[in-house]
Length: 168
Image (cartoon, rainbow, N blue to C red; front, side):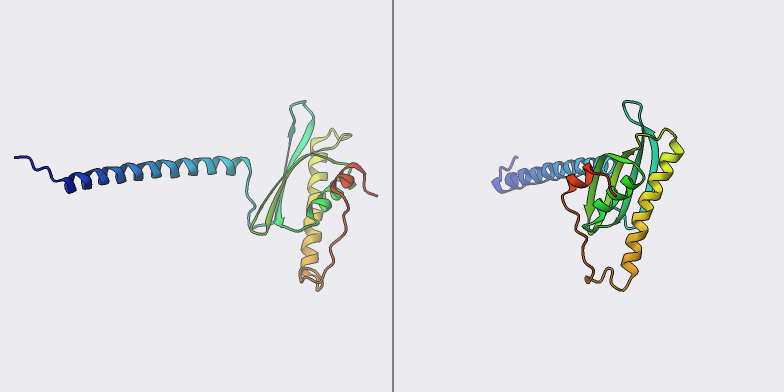
């Protein structure tokens, strides 16, 4: 004998639909996790530790370049300071990617020295310039006027002007 109870049939369909929906949600979450992992590999997020990482390589044209990553507290004058420091040692930024998260920033820079053909010299000059910016920032944060909101922000002018004209 077969019982055709509509409420049981509805309940069975509802359960199937919930199961299918849950399976679809799980599949979608896994896909989002995969995409997030890929993005994190391509664009590293800022870490809690201040760091400067520098690696030398060659670009597609065979030119000697340095890939540098600077991770620190975000502040309005950071990029102009990085540009100024690199220009002071006659280096040029070819590419800059900036990622911020929770008051931290990671600047990933591709730098070259047009008159520099020695890999160690280029790495050393880049590392020294970027570490100098980090040390000045840390010293400013530790000083009585730094980091307490009482310090004045440096006027930087237009960013394109900073990029186009060498520093004095």
